Length: 412
Length: 188
Image (cartoon, rainbow over all chains, first blue to last red; front, top):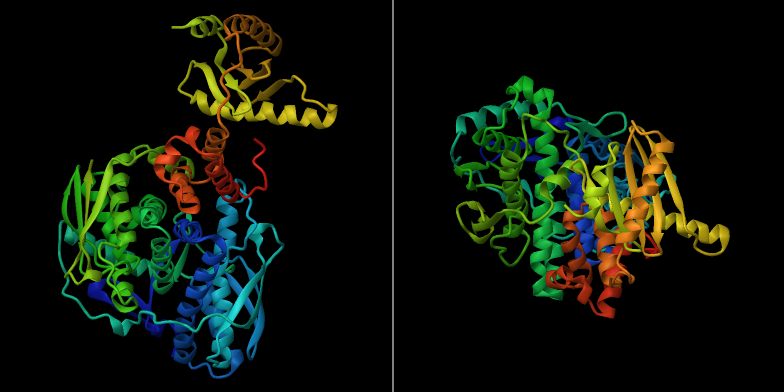
């Protein structure tokens, strides 16, 4: 079987899987901001461990399914399949030397390290490695190559983000055993919902999904598109680190929970500005849909279509005015983690959905679409510094047993 | 219109003047013909003068008064010490020759000196200086208050008034600032 044959979708839900592992597309701005939030929330040492361990278990699920699915039998074949997948997903190139129970790896153009250097390298120094996702991959690939259940752990011994010449890893026994993760089989088909501008959203979504189907890593193993570095990434990683960080903060101080929740929402905001904005500005968009003019319904419905195409769920517009947006969805990628992996529900906690919905309104109403200023950090700071005039609430959550997740964004 | 506006408007090729407090690089007075953020100009050029004073400490063994001339595309910029805690930055457009810019700056300099407060300006607390430094140089500045709150446990209310931070809280803030900026020392 070929790798492409392992792709599957719950089409009515706009959720995508590879070998049963739930995947979405996210850009480097989101990835770096989310990792940074986790480190701020739980401390850099514990943050690294949390990110590395969640990456490890998410990669184990995905790599095992892919290596088995493509019929790779020998350790060399299985390792090759893992490394090819890593590059195809836009994470860069990893060369793993995998012995049974130990190994080493070297990375080139690793998504996190490379993008960190590009985005922040001229502004701040970094003394800690950044590639926890690659470390998780290195350990998981070594295990998958040799079909061993004994947990391995990788240490990043060199990282380009801290000015080392290359990213290097050592792999040895250790680390926690992998925990429960979400699998395609945990999700059930849902009745499609419809909302405002549904016909437009569906048509754009179909065109975008067709376009994204052809996206793959370049010679560097990176996907550079729409002005960002894009990864195909595991929702089990995103959810594991996000909800894990909230749990740690809650144990430490209930008063700090709104801070970490605010930053998790901000990661959604960052994503929409950079990736959604980049798509809306792109010549590909102009060819597929036509140049965007900046009308409120046009922008928000376009954003919902993009969210669906990126695998975030079947987001619909329930209500829209210049002062209020209600986004409703019977599927999104955060709630399944809460419902499947956690023993306690997490009501009102679809952080990405909340942050993205706020950003839809700000993108529509704060950005001068006629001027088309480049989507730079300076513009982001210029537009979004200071208190937001928008507040967001989530009255309904799939994770808490509701039929939908509903997010309400209102002008203060 | 105050004394600085009146003095500045008479200089046809002057685009802006900023008087910056040192060492915290905060604007004391500013004027511009355009829509610049004079507080940003104060911060960046103040930093430049402070760095040069530190460099002179290395070269001459003690901080020296400095005068800087910067020729940039479209602008000529002169930065001159007024006294230990204040520096003036004059920004001319390209129509002004360097010699003429120096003459105008000298005249303005005298006028500014006559209008300075007699005593040293109130020293800002270390907490305020660290906070301003962090907001100026941290990436994703809008996220800094929440990041610092998470790292330190300081509340947004604490951070809204950094002048009132205790010594222990100031140390926490400094540790977070160093972590966020990736530096061993803030040099404040």
